[in-house]
Length: 295
Image (cartoon, rainbow, N blue to C red; front, side, top):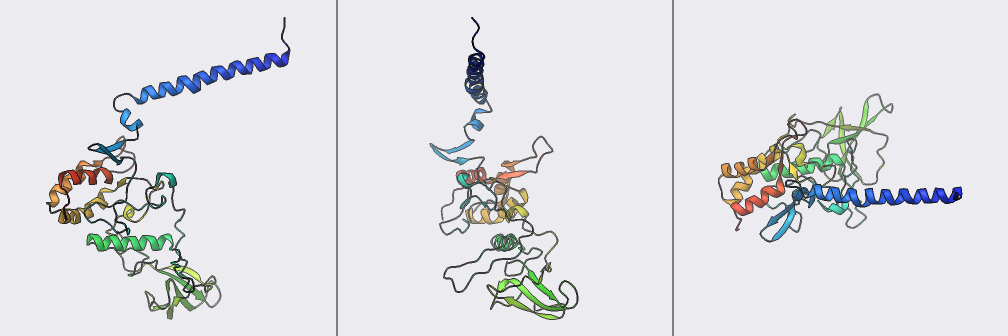
């Protein structure tokens, strides 16, 4: 007896559902689980967890902030790169800041609003971080387009004819009054400090390079976050400028600390992908094991 066409179609769909469920919902996950248990893969499949004694202290895949309760760097540790994931390295808030190269003008704090700190541009964040790293590590923290105070060196330049003609006015956009501008004069006119809420949109946004070296001593990864905000690695260059501080604070020879940095430095993937990197989480854990900090 031939079944009705509609019933045959439903039975065929049911058979396909059962077969695909067994293949993709049972067999495939079990096969992947079995492969994940192979030697060399099982630790990664479990999250690349790092253990210290009986305690799990982190993952080799997720960075950590080595700071105190107020956010200041713990000087006995190598510092990670900045993180835009939540309050820092939060796996539930992974992501970038969404600020790009054109983010150079701050939103100044409103003095009429208590506790308003404004919103720094990406440029000012980079400038402030570079200055802080320079002060902490004893290196030159200057960067192009940054003021000595650590904000973006950006002017609103007003021309007589709009975008052209002689300059009639210049305002340091990221330096709120009464702070003195980072330059006193530009193109023959006095530079003004910026006033919160004032409209400078008719001015031409003009970054000023300044006299910073072309190759800053503070590496880029020390002042910018990774795309995920979770990267546990820093560049060997950033690790190197921290060696002297960490060795001094822990009372050990700098050569010994340098050897640990080399131990935790990985090369390019497959020999040509990416750049060498230092895993800060594993490095700091190794530091605590070998050279405990007792201050």
